[in-house]
Length: 109
Image (cartoon, rainbow, N blue to C red; front, side):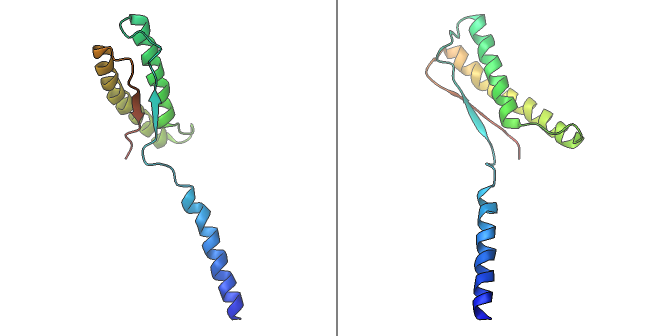
């Protein structure tokens, strides 16, 4: 009987382990490279803007069509994240520093 209780306890502990390991990061982020762009040109800044938008979409994720609240959360995340990432990009473009990566992180709580 005691062996059964020990085995049951071990099974419970081993089942709980993978669930804890599957937690997602609080604020996912993506680094946007721009070393290959000439940020002194309009074409370079447009390309950077497209890369930032793709990173914003990636870090904010998406919600299924039936989840209206989730879709609204994703839209708000994208607006806020794009605003913050664009401000960082403006600094990089203004200084024409071609060596730094722009880190795009979701600002969801």
